[in-house]
Amino acid sequence: MNSQQLDAILWRHLSSLPYFRGFLRAVEDRFYQEVPLPEPVLDLGSGDGHFASVAFDRKLDVGLDPWVAPTLEAKGRECYRLLVLGQGAEIPFADGSFASVTSTSVMEHIPDIDPVLAEVNRILQPGGKFVFCLPNHRFPEKLWGRKVLEKIGLKKIGAVYARFFNKIARHAHTDAPSVWAARLKQAGFEVVQTWDYFPPKALHILEWGHLFGLPAWLCKKLFGRWILVKKRWNLIIPWKLTRKYFDHPVSDEGVCSFFIARKKL
Image (cartoon, rainbow, N blue to C red; front, side, top):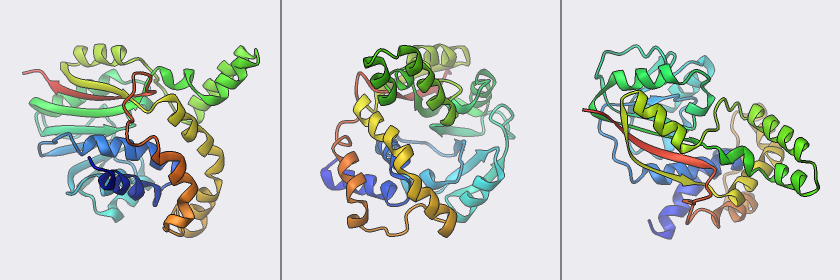
């Protein structure tokens, strides 16, 4: 992708989300631009629909999510042909209903993950594609707060901080890619491609944003949207903080992992 294309991807997320959330979603967006998704497509954990509304140039066939309020918000965005309230372990569609399943930063929030993987395999056609991304084992290890505490000799408090951050992020899993590859194999998938992304310095920018994102939270509560003034001058600081890490997000030290898997024939 050229610089203008990358600018456009980052801007469409930073201009509509708190920057720490928008930054990571933008990186995942740029990956999806290069991953063909045969139709019909199920989005597992569709949430408020923001990602689907900006990352894809067409409506996805089905969005599935267990929460009512985000699903109603997704309905207003009109980015799915059908929205379904449901659990990932009990997807209400027949065997082989979909050619592709996507899941963007969702799988890490599901405590009992094996039934979900089995269900995704069931609803996919033979050879169907399962594309998902999530934080990995480095995420809690590379947090800025943890590293600072460890440097001053407070390793136990650093570990507590990492557990606290995982708790507020609602992470049930921060596992190594090898763990996910084993789960996928057990569920009947083969990994076609995987890579790690979002290096530790980018994670630190995201981490700080949880504190500095308070104005965006207030704006959402008062006016119904995260960003009130969608102008470059208003977002110049988050733009400067994030843009320099956007050209080369793939990293051997990345704290997140992207998977392209395929249901075995």
